[in-house]
Image (cartoon, rainbow, N blue to C red):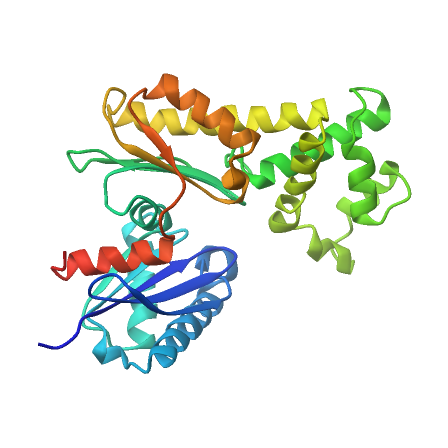
Length: 317
């Protein structure tokens, strides 16, 4: 009997991760490339990143696409049938796979994090979203609206709130905060008053390209550093991030009528890593949202989750 291999892809806005699993779920190869969210980088760049990750992981394993039983792609920005068709087209141009499964990144994160398609995942990285599947197979998602109208409690949200706190402290409109000195040092400024020309750099200035969503999200660790040092302003920002993420989580749990059920909630993403103040705020709220639920760290990542979904679609265990 021929061996079974399952390829999983986590296609995100920052990077693309591809893994290759054997039939028993053991990982034998992994590769990383750039962003494959075609809404962010465009179809051509997204397809190039996807091709690079897929070809690299196959080459690492010494395997041809024809030897892959099924490929699963969990892609950011794939929430509608039209999006799935775009990704399926990309995959078809990259290689001839026997079976292709396309879903969104949150479902892949749930399956990778919990190990099966049941439970809830809360992802708080650059953006923020929650996704769940109940025992009846019904699915629901909340937030993931992007930085302009959503992603509340995300690293981007925390970074912007940190900047706002520094501006208020500089003016005397808000309490003093250790964030002011941390931010000034981090950006190489002499004073917080220099933030305006840096953040609002004109379009033809090379600095303008640096102040995108990822860089603003990259300020979140400064808030975490100040909070760990006892800064009340930073602690308040992180606690509010936790409350907003809890509201997102609660919307999924209540929408799926899982309030009284026992299930696992996997907490993923940089904001929730390390079980810091945001994690603590969310897990405390979970005790009220769904008392029988259990918060866990991810068992495996979204790329593995995509491979496991491919295995399930192909009739594997």
